[in-house]
Image 1 (cartoon, rainbow, N blue to C red):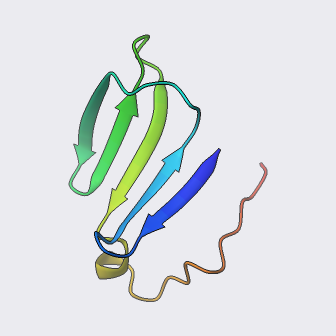
Image 2: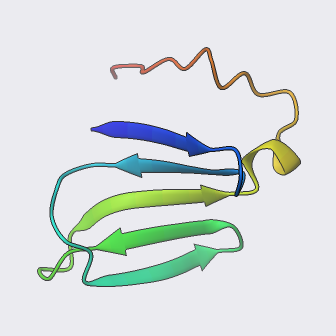
Length: 66
């Protein structure tokens, strides 16, 4: 899994695997889910990160195991 942030577009992307994107769906405003050819979720794009959450510290990302 990889997490990337593009400050030019103010978008974060969570890449779950290296499969090719076959389809994308905006499941709610600012949240786009990418699917592979078998309709499995392979990535999630979060738009307007700083605009929606100006208090977020993108240098301090924590992955919690549940």
